[in-house]
Length: 244
Image (cartoon, rainbow, N blue to C red; front, side, top):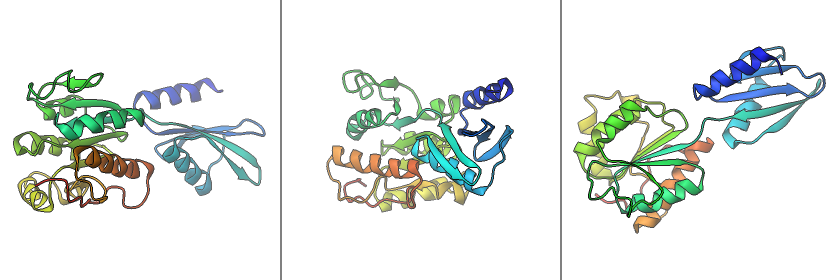
């Protein structure tokens, strides 16, 4: 591999960009594709190659693309997955281990120390403080999801503002449609309409979830849909059990 190409690949990964290394199996010509754009290399690219590279990133799997010149091997390098849960509540106790099993590094943040305890969240990164401070200090990238669960506007709203201003691929908040309408009214003066439209609320797919564990399943499913690029992945849910 060309040293300059390797250096560029490592630099892009350090910046948590979405990268695909394309290699022509006959001949070995290569191209580096960063965030869907060809940045450098000797391999020519076209729309078909860029589309195949995007599919490889979405699936997190290497693949080969057949062309008239021969096969091209596509190897994706995605940033690590991360989930930030705002609110050390019962739903979070189910959602955190589910997300960990799906490959996410999970952080639970809550200023209420009686809730954010190691006993309630074993083997989870706990940040006892105001969630917006965490989000300002370490802004979510495009492989980060943020799920807001406290039902307390003084905790939830500032966190949502920071999350919706970030590159997070999924931002969701618990609550009924009535609760969400009031939330939108509060946040409209500080957030543009297109950013507010990114918010999945009520959080989760409509599967009739009632218990905290069932709601966590619905949120995990919607988050996966958003990650994998299927249509409707970040639209509003309508779980009847998501509270008011």
